[in-house]
Image (cartoon, rainbow, N blue to C red; front, side, top):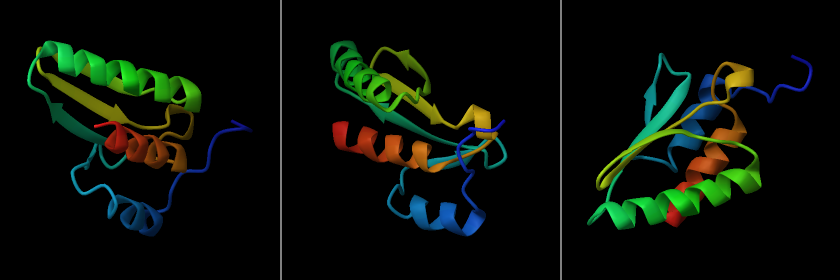
Length: 98
């Protein structure tokens, strides 16, 4: 794919993840994931709305699910078949929104 974002090298990824200690590598290291817990459904949904707006601005969208007061988010750049700087940037933005 000619315009696919550059996939992070293992050493780069390790450095970047130092700023995201609550995110875990999943899917054989091709994605990062985190679970967020809130007081209730309304707070979880409000968070999802803020994340959705940030994802739209970045044109980079998470895989996620919601069950009452919990939001599970997984980030990966599908076109790169792994993690790219876009995933790290969105994870950092999500942390700010939390």
